[in-house]
Image (tube, rainbow, N blue to C red):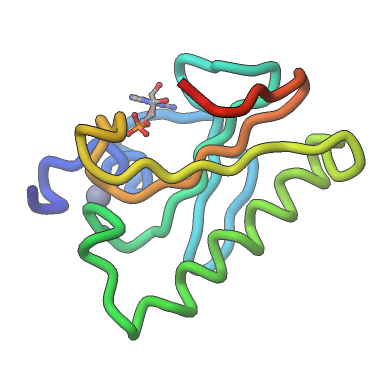
Length: 116
Ligand code: 5GP
Ligand code: ZN
């Protein structure tokens, strides 16, 4: 899939609305349209990368920036002490449905393990 027909690229470009709660030069965080927890935020790179399998060594800093964004979002949402889960699904078999990498940040309720 090219970035032309990517839903999350359209959110980055402002062509599709989203409730954006955090922005940096390289990342964007917005609320999931179908929240699975009281806080459910998606953290994405501005640049299109389809899956974890498409990451290259040069993207290591970008991936780190996604986690720095997650830490900031957790602080904003008051989850730093209570805890939160971050998940990045890779491929349809793991439940990935939007092929622009995104870190789910979930919190505000007890998180079970193993996940379904
Ligand atoms: P995945 O299944 O790929 O790991 O996660 C994709 C997530 O994107 C899902 O949790 C889904 O609810 C969310 N999502 C799908 N379409 C939209 C949308 O148009 N806006 C927002 N904010 N979230 C979306
Ligand atoms: Zn994209």
